Amino acid sequence: MLIQPESHRVQAPFQQVLKGMNTHLRRALGAAAAMLVLNSAFASAEESPPQFGPWVRGLAGGAAHQGKTDFSDGPGDFSVNRGFFQGSMGYAWNRDTSVSVSLGAGSSVYNFSDEVTVGGETPWEEIRDYRISTPIRFAPTENTNAIIIPSLRSYAETGADLEDGLSTGLLAGVSWTLSEDLSIGPGIGWFSELGGGSSIFPILVIDWNITDTLSLSTGQGMAASQGPGLGLYYKPTKKWSLGLAGRYEKTRFALNDNNGADRIGEDKSLPIVFTAEYSPWPMTSISFMAGVETEGRLKLEDGSGKSLGGSAFKPAPIVGITFSTLF
Image (cartoon, rainbow, N blue to C red):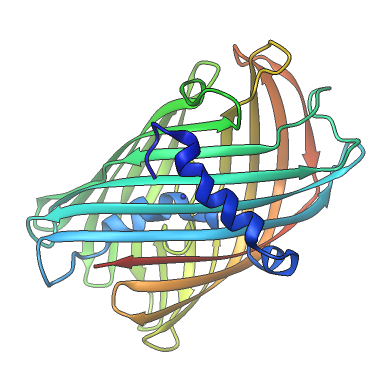
């Protein structure tokens, strides 16, 4: 969820992977890609840099499936298959100060039944996702840590111009170390929106070791398209961690203007998932996720952001797998 300029060159591997999966495997893989996006920025940026050198490289990826679900206020159903891959490189001057660059690409393939319309029109099919972000960490004081993450991203349906799906964003947060077990502070997120305007939302930056095995934190094992989630985690062993996490997610994307009119699609929901993360060695993890997407709604707008209609959908099952590693 790697480089934007040549869209089909980057997208092709995802097409081949998704098509190459048999039906049972695709259904066994889940909504991990949707959850991976900001986790790669916040969580990995907050981790202490490796001890083996100032240069840090990372890889992350995932495959995802939102199970078939019916619409609450109309006929038909739909499901979604997702995939994402990301590479990053950064430089750490010390434990608290680093700059990195992350490049990611992904795909969300929607499968609607024939009778479905959104806003009175035939809905979208495949949404491409490309992004670049630059997490910056620093420590203004001995007990204060700050993080700033500017980003540029494009969400666009296959056949639409990537430029039409461009948006910019900025995440920023600061936390104070109150004890060896608790760091907490405020943050804010800002993203420009397709169709005009922007969205601003608050963020809680927290890392709280409640006990030796229980913790509450921002952006570990979960993520969102426009803001990190919050998760409660239990670590029974050094290599395993179990968690419950949730977040608000909203994605807006440019659609292919086959009918000569500019269109913008929107997919928003509140996913809640159980996670099981395995770390075979330091700075490498594989996460398995299963849960449900609640409060879901699909929406269609014209090119200026005026609503053309939308449809709510019933709670949808989600399952998935992601991986991440630093080296």
